[in-house]
Amino acid sequence: MDSIHHELRLPETISPFGVGAITDIRGESLIAPDTSWWDLARSPEVHCTRLMERLGAGVLREAPTNPGWAAPGAATLRYWRFPAWRFCERCERLGSVTGKEKGKWDNHCECGGFLVPMRFVAVCDGGSHIQDIPWFRWAHACDEAAVDEKIRVCRAYKQLRFRKISNAGEGLGSLFVVCDGCEASRPLSELVGRSALSRDRIRCEGRQPWEDQEITGDRDCPHDLVATQRGATGNYMADRISALEIPEARPASVEFADKVRSHVYFQKVVADNGGPQSEVVAGWIRDEIGGTVEEVLAIAQGGGAKSEEMLLDLKDGEWAAFVGKLAKRRDQGAGDFVVDGRRLSEAGGPVQLLDTLSGVGQVRRLREVRALRGFRRFRPDAAFVRADLGPNSFRYPTYPAIDVYGEGIFLRFDEEKLSAWEAIPEVRARAAILKRRREELPWAVTRLDVPEPRYVALHTFAHLLIRRLAFESGYSSASLQERIYANPDRVDKTGGVLIYTAAGDAQGTLGGLVRLGEPARLVPLIVAALEDADLCSNDPVCIESDRQGVSQLNLSACHGCALVSETSCETANRLLDRQLVLGGSDVPGLFDGLLAEIRAGRHAG
Image (tube, rainbow, N blue to C red):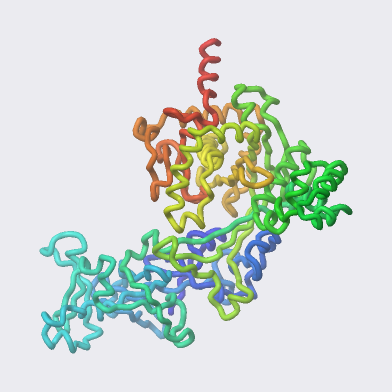
């Protein structure tokens, strides 16, 4: 195989050119093999204890790199040609063999024409496998009752051509695979459809294109193949995970539970097992370390927060770290997590806004580690394919990873205000629409957060602020990302938003976001973001809608008002609703009345 030299940025090795992804480079179609094909000796290890606690055994590694264009013997990242079937743009010859010139593989036909990858590939509809369509077999897989013996026994493997027949109409019906040997031909229009390949008895091989059949052997895959265009979005759905590298902070409930368990009287409470003495002894513990009798009894009975459960959730630790930083105000640290705590009241502003946001963090520096766990194909609930398919992948897998540095703004919402608002029946009924739809989709249950009212409102607010910050910060909107902390079911309830930039080698710590995190600048920005969302170019259709977006997992939210780049969003632009932010019809929003207060003040002024 001939070499193609092409430069990639490190973040692109995670997405969009990560393990299993198909990409077009210099007129050729390539697919990235798993990490067992990497030169691990030249792949530096990425360290992130918090992330590895979630992933389990294994190691995080950065893709092999080299400065500038690769010299002979320099570290490179391998890609595999896929699909192997290509046709000549000059003579229309179709085949899977690349030519040779002076002993080297060359991507040109014998006639000198350039070989173009076939547009369609075959994807397994449940096993996440992908393979070439066997074009010769497909072209001759006609109805045996209607085909003559000449086509049935044809062996003219090198006489296949891919032709456009102008008098056959437009679209796929005009594109034919033709055999010059037996004159068999089929239009690509017969290729589409869920059962088209199964009808022709073409089965899934049960492997990825780069896996060697001699090594893996025959695999029995029970799922059917479906022909799709090789660049279709559904052909590759990456499963990525990221974590902020912070000094691991223990949530307050975990600290309290550990104090209770270590108290000298705790075993007496456990031994009484809810008897008459347990409440008295729990009162003694409460008097010494605080809390309530009920909390002490819950911990003794196996309830309350458990360290293992809480610390496995990456966001819990991050939330506790941010809360601790806000309490200390000016951060004198010099590590990879530097946050200055501020309050919006320092600059003044609308009462409704000051009551809703209880704290602001200017995140001067943060480190984020991103890793690729694996991918799925065709359906979000298809079989999961690991990023490492090597012989040691189950025991000690290698995950592609990068670490990037950035800055951001953290906003903490007032818990009392959030709890009171989300208890309103109309608010809960509005969010329940998304809850029902999420529960009806098996893939959404495992991949999307529960759309509690606070999550939907804070998530939508983050999108509105990202759209406004893109005008003011100097960063493109695709360089800004969100991290939503909105869980009312934890003992330590969370309610906050982090908007940050961590774009690797392109944009990282330019200072634009930190500067805008100053209360005097941030208040007008938030107001402007909410005013932008008050009127969408698709209103009144958008604001009155309760079924928009993929799988109808958005309510009042569209590209005209609340959607951002999918790479910026945790949920790929799902679980959004402007009504839960600003209010609408009979639903009070989290910031309901804020714009009226501002406009009344302007009018009075």
